[in-house]
Image (cartoon, rainbow, N blue to C red; front, side):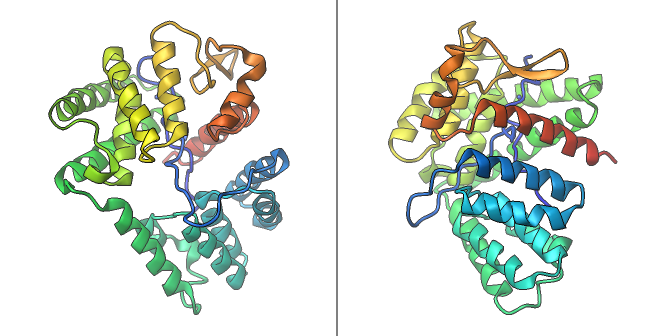
Length: 322
């Protein structure tokens, strides 16, 4: 099963969040080798089209687009994993292993998903699969390494619930009042808990809780819209973490915009969206003509691509309705 790659971090669900979203934007995973190439607009478009085609079951059309996206500079671990699923379903075993290797190179760490994913059943017995799975497991272990494992586990648990309640609301097309209430309760609980943690221990950085759980801490702050003063308090902590190499510029951009929007000011990067006449648009945006340049400076795609990601996330959520 292909993975929903946009965390629900960017959706403004509670006080109106991804990143995944998704959109939350996905947890930033960097390759350990040479710097990534700059993806061309054509490559990013190919990646989005490939994702849509594969969701629709048109794997034959999707695979060439995944190849074009990779050659054009798209180096996402999730995209590589999804391309591996497509190749496996097409019985292109060697290519599937190549894509899995690329996913591992880019920091893919969801070994639990990989172990149960039926899309990969055609390649599990091939020579080389076990070695790639081992690499993914090692990356997962590395991202979980923490000085405070109890705090790490609590952060990961709370992030999982955060995402579950947002996905439930998305599946109702944001109409389920019970789901809205549940989301507000979860956000309130997470905010109160994390405020106490930070007051006692400071920002949960990677050394303290590991890379994945530190991302979870950012996500909970991103969704603390009922306590803007807390978001403002955390913003310089995240800036310091990014300066130390322990944080993501993209995540900092998201929180910067969140604080600006929540304090009635124009946002810089266009990460905070609202629905206007049935379409997603950026809220109160500073200097719209140059927003794509600002986004590129922190590693974000264009506004056009970002809007398209919202539509893809909505569509996939609808497809996953029980």
